[in-house]
Length: 464
Ligand code: CA
Image (cartoon, rainbow, N blue to C red; front, side):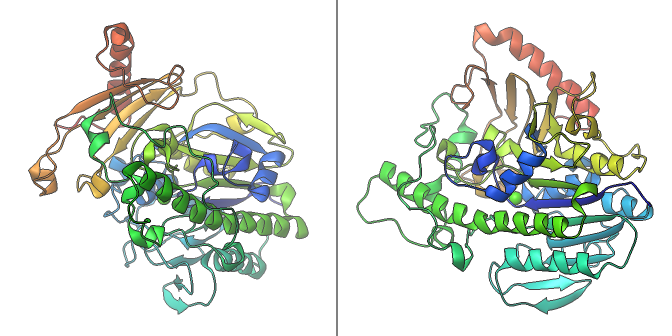
């Protein structure tokens, strides 16, 4: 019998670590995700390399940076014929493979999933209620709530397996992505108006770049379909921000609750079918999310709340229960980690490294202590200027490389290149940009060199 573990990979969409109670959430309780953390390892420094849904998903499948797998923006679709994808390599190695839920990497012959024995995906963003899904190429209409349906369909596939092979199952929830529509049973959860506000809700963006000042991801700018209601008449701009924050977080936390239920249902299933001992379970999200932090919703920026991903993993007997890992794991490292557990040799084209040793106790001595990030969306969605940067354990350097009319076709946006530098130890909320200050000249030089090194190592080049 194979001793290779099954892999159950559960990924939600836009679920920030600071909305999980195991990570110290002040706004909600997630008992089932917490149970996974109690029984496994919780990583505190997991980061994405491009904080956007579609690119992060491509990176997770391929172990490659956006410029290498060529899925840089929301408008790009994956070329599914490419051989370097986790599910393809695991399938070749004898795993049964399936994906259920949100794909968001394109829906046509070239970009539909390949390398899965079974796939059942939402088209595009999909719907929260009564969604249409595409099951192995066939469109089917369903009744019910999307998070529950995805859970049911994942379990149906596990039930239908008549195989001694290990499995690799990706359960990709649509929730809690906007427009934040909860399950009926959670419609009255939490009290709107009583959610604690983040320290930086009323950020005035002083010392920050123009790119930060012009963005339209402020909570009060959120479109009505997301907030569901218009703000009360006659309130000030500050009051509007506070109102929009409460409206956003009420629906966001309610929407998360069914995801937490799903984790509980899946963990129960493993228990009931004697699968717990030999199944690596991972819970994560495709990136972080601003939860009113800096006055924002959405992601895209390289600030901590957006850059950071939750990552919890359980494998009894290998991963110590209740452990916490603080080494740096990137989304580019997920695919090689799956491959490592499956006994698959990691191809040279994969750019990340297996995090297995880290999950099981300690990272190797030469493990990464800095990361390279790049957000590529030159169409300036939500008025977020493209940027790249480097983060190590203490400092973060960000370069907003400027855009012109040629990029955006929008005469309102003509931004010069700008830099930001943060000391995360003295300023963990990234409120004080110290780029250009004489006392940080040395740090700045070190971080610039590190940016060049990591950019070259990833095979990327500066914007010209
Ligand atoms: Ca996302």
